[in-house]
Amino acid sequence: MGLIDDNLDFSPEPTKAAPAWKILIVDDEPEVHQVTRLVLGNFRFADRPLQLISAYSSAEAEKLLREHTDTAVILLDVVMETEQAGLKLVRTIRERLDNHFVRIVLRTGQPGQAPEHEIVAAYDINDYKEKTELTAQKLATTLYSALRAYRDMRTIEASRRGLEVVIKASSEVFSHHHPQHFASVVLSKLTELIGVEGGALCCRIAHPNGKLPEHFQVTAASGQFSRYLSRNAEEKLPQHMVESLERAFSSKQHVFSDDHYVLHFSDSDATEALLYVGESHRLDEHAHQLMQVFCSNVSIAYENMHLNQELFDSQLDMVYLLAGAAETRSKETANHVRRVGILASMLGRMHGLDEKTCELLNYAAPLHDIGKIGIPDAILNKPGAHTPEETVIMRTHAEIGARLLAGTKRPAFRMATEIAMTHHENFDGTGYPRGLAGSEIPIAGRITALADVFDALGSRRCYKEPWSDDEIRKFIKSQRGLKFDPALTDLLFENWDEIAALRKEMPDF
Image (cartoon, rainbow, N blue to C red; front, side):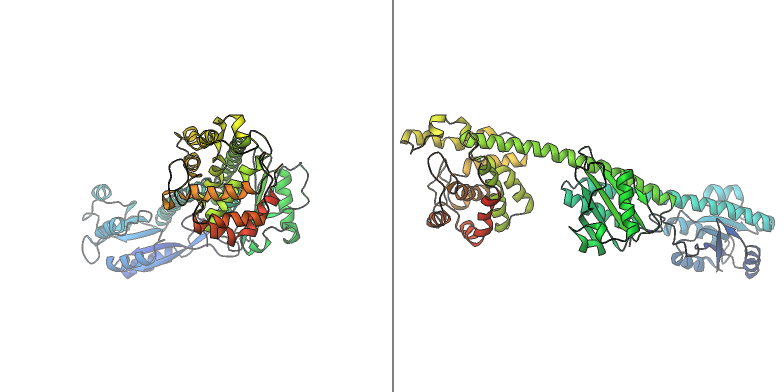
């Protein structure tokens, strides 16, 4: 269930009666209880009746207050089992029970023993009345005032807690940057906020033309709507709910119905999202305002997510262009660097690396040969074998690349620096530039070395034709434990078909 009642103060279902205000009468005289019940028998405030609870001692009152934490008003006698019993109970309520919401009306038949100015100054009470002056009308007036104050304090507290919940939920939304994760976390937070048991779903419309889309495809879902993922919402939802989706899309506004809501979000890239929340409670004005605050935060987060993604994609395109240009200064192997990144991340997952590291591999591995930008064209694009002198120059690209990438604090470029320096190190220690062996070679360098050679052997170069799968298999098998990490090599062979399929999906130009 969601955060209802005390936290967000949602209105009850229309068919349920409003709860009664709890009034605790604390007095050791039974006649006082009888008269109070007689006077307040038909009393109502804000269309809600009273529930009168009786306690005949301060100890009994404390026990009842622990059971009824939502008590609104206490009509409290001062002198009971002791002359100060009522006053001690006030301290217990405020300090030990930490209840600062209940309104305490002190009633005394012996004002001389508890002078009003001293009591009001020393104790956290809300009203002071002598029993002789509490006529039926004055008691009603006193109760109206106390209940109004209690209601307003509860409303303020509900707003404070509600805003805390909204802020926390919003911060979680802002922390997610992938569209799929973003939609899922928004759905999760919405169902928590409004106590929806049925679930919710999200439909995303990319670059709409202003006309109603043919389909509202479900891109994220929770609860009972999970089975609709990747399917069309209009084919599964009742017609009146589909009409709400269409109305929200056409009006570019949220739609709040009796039993469901459709929230509309858009960004500057003309991408729109509709979040459908089904079987929900009717929100009161307060909860509705909190929901609007949350929706505003989601709109900002949605816009920022796409702006950040657009900036990131632009930067990634630049990385690929630079890496491709450094590789051969031509377009013939532009997709090689992209494939190396994807292959490296695939091998990382197969090896059991965490998702963040695998994502960094995808961005960093394409820059493995960035140092080739410092190698002369005559050597870089030579169609035949290099001379010993040319080989020495060619091998400097590892250190050149590391120097070019060094100095940045960005995790992807820090990993790219490591990869540039170590992707030509061999597992048996015969590689360059430092002759590292085994686990001395960072895992990112070992993975990229295998991904790079696997893909390069299957690509056309100025000095060779692409190798067949059998030839590639034979070579890599011969280099297991020599050039390549044995464990990674085994993973490559175990997942060969999946890895080899990438070339068909992303062929060379």
